[in-house]
Image (cartoon, rainbow, N blue to C red):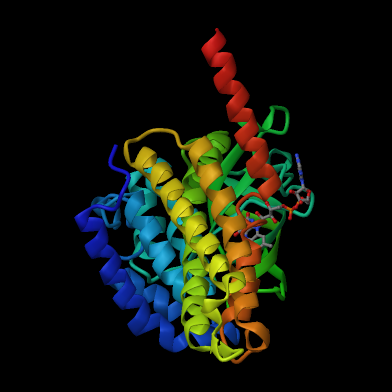
Length: 386
Ligand SMILES: Cc1cc2nc3c(=O)[nH]c(=O)nc-3n(C[C@H](O)[C@H](O)[C@H](O)COP(=O)(O)OP(=O)(O)OC[C@H]3O[C@@H](n4cnc5c(N)ncnc54)[C@H](O)[C@@H]3O)c2cc1C
């Protein structure tokens, strides 16, 4: 199994790196000020940088998840909020459609999103159902040929801007979630869909995260994806695929913080010499690099498995846990290396620190990642002993 980056992956990275420098760096401060990066999503679509893993017939790049994580890292290194908007539309929303939708559904709901003309969002979390996703209550009832949707979804990234929402709802309350939940695409301009609130966030400014309410929203039957009551396996598949990409986004932020700490410690002088000459500073840089390298390898291991068509539940959870906790530690230490100026808005270090905090919560908390990992450990033990 090839673990390190191939030549084509390295060339692709250069392309995305250039794109991020040319098109995202100039607006990164505006995004931080609250601008939703819709134009960037359009440009990413035009450059075939949305949907790298999905087939070309579906409007994707026909490349693989090892390319998707490169996009995530390079964009997040410049603007993590822009990456959050891209990920929510081009991966979280798009992946279930790419793997489970019919041709007609893909043409209507996937292709325009991968082209960057439309925006998507994934709506799973509810006020009463966060880590325990199986306890969702949003209800979709079949009435006179349409589904009628009632319920609440909160913390939905892109939710206030998206053209399409990928919604998980209970379609058979008499059954357990595994066989009673369905996935539906809901156009956000459907009557009965309301944005109740847009959240203010600690970091990831520019990301659009909202609370949505559905009141008798009518959704055509044809918008059910992957078959009636087949929503739960779609959800599990989506979570397995999103974790390495989330991890790669955090790697991008951490890399930028590390690079800034290397530069600053080389030029900032105290006690008559550059601060890098104090081991109390330079050893922090060593620890940061070890974490960056380890995170990259864990992410690569997970995406190599996905690209071989294998399950990467354990590997994705390990990569997400390690990369997100490392990003938090690295941005924290990088801020420390910058001293007082790191705590000010004069440099982006404080932004990296705030942005990095999010992904220990989003996409499944660190505690849930540990839960998934231990479950896989004991599952493997049972498998070996049976
Ligand atoms: C900015 C932002 C954007 C988001 N974007 C989206 C989105 O686009 N779509 C979407 O559907 N959701 C989204 N989410 C929701 C996100 O996935 C959830 O916040 C996350 O899964 C945690 O759920 P919760 O907030 O309800 O916390 P809870 O589940 O209530 O957890 C609270 C605490 O209890 C811990 N805990 C819970 N259960 C266990 C357990 N079994 N063992 C140990 N500890 C446990 C948690 O780890 C956490 O520390 C977003 C959230 C935020 C903040």
